[in-house]
Length: 206
Image (cartoon, rainbow, N blue to C red; front, side, top):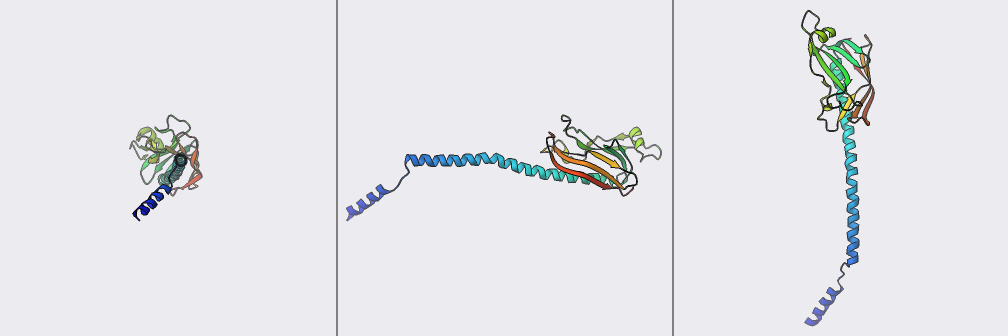
C-alpha cells in the first residue's frame, strides 16, 4: 500500500507542467514590450500635464494682470497716453504719479519678441501745488525702479510666462481706458498661452 501511494505521488510530480525555455523567453519578451511601451508613454504624459499646468497658469497671470490694471486706473486722473503704448496718470487712491507701458524686463532683455507690462511710480519734487501733475513728477521729483506689474512675471516664474498688451487708448470724458491685444507668452515668444482681444477699465474719476 505504501509503495502504491509513493508511486502515485511520483507520477503526479512527473506530470506537473513546467515552463519550457521557449515559453520563458516569450514571457520575457512580452514583459519587455509592455515595459517599453509604458516607458515611452511617460514623457508624453508629462508633456500633456505640463501643457495643462502652463495653460492654467497663463489664465491666472492674465486675470491677475487685468486686476492690477483695474486697481491702478480706477481712481486715476490726469490720464495721458503716449504713442498708443504708454499711459501716465495720477493715482488718486494711492497718491502716486505713475506710468504703465510694455518693455523688456530684466528676464526678457535677451529676447526682443517678449515683453512685460511694466509699472513705475514717480513722486513730485514737492514744490508748489503741482504734486499731481505728471510733468512735475517727471522732471522735478524721482521715481521707483520699473517693475513688472505682476510679480509672477518675474525671473523666478517657473514656466517663464510674460503678459503684454498691444496698445492702450483713452478718450477724455469717455470714462474708460482700453487695452487691446493682450497676450500671455512664454519667454521664447514661440506661442501665445492666453489671449484677450480687449480689456476696459472703468475710470470713476473721469
